[in-house]
Image (tube, rainbow, N blue to C red; front, top):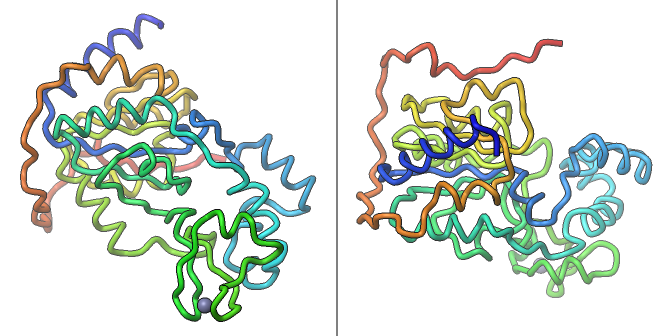
Length: 281
Ligand SMILES: [Zn+2]
C-alpha cells in the first residue's frame, strides 16, 4: 500500500464511522472482482468483434434484439449469462456496512444479480437484472436458467412468444422513476462510495450531479484522468480496500426515515460540484 493510499484509507475509515446516510454506487469493477468479464474492455471488444463481427454495443442493442433475435440470444447466452458469478468478498463488507444501519441505498448498473445473492437490500438496479425474464405477450416470468438452457431463442412455454431478458439494452432509457430515486438518494447522502468505476461513468455523473457534500469517495483499481472530481481516491481493488475502511465494530445506528429532501429550485451550486466531464479528443 503506498503512503497516499494509506493516509486516505485512514480518513475514509473515520468518515464511514461518523456517517449515517451512505449511498454506495457499484461499477463494473465489482463484477470483474467477482470473476466476470467487462465486455466493453478493449481486449474483450476485440475478441467479440473477431467472433461475431459486431461490437458489444451493437450485439446488445434493442435494434439487434428486434432484428436478429437468434444472433442476439447466441451472444447473450455465450457472453452474458454463460456462468453464474459468485459475489466477491467485497460484498460481505457491504453487507456489514448495511447491517450497521448506515446505508440508504445501493445503486448499481450491473445486472448479474450479485447484490441480491450477497444479501444486500435497498438496491436500485438501473439496468435491470438477468433474473427478470418475461414473456412480453402473456407476462409469464422465467428464471435465468430457463433462458440459458433454451435451444436457440427462448420462447414462452404458454404462448410461444420470444422471451425478453430483463436488462436494459442499448438504445433503451433507464426508467425515470429509478433514475430519480437514485439521484435523490445521492443528493441527500452524507457520504457516497463509488466502487469499481470512475467519475466518467454515466451512472456516476448522473447520480452524483446534485451532490453538494465533500465526502465522495472513489475506490477503484484503474487510475483515470477524472479521478480529481472525487473528494477522496483510493487506487486498489475494492476487495482489498473495504475491509480496511469498514471495520468490524462499526457503531450501529437506527436509520433515519428515508424521506427525500425537498427539491431546491434556484439553489446555487458550488463550482466544484459541477462534475460534468468533457472528453478532449
Ligand atoms: Zn407467453
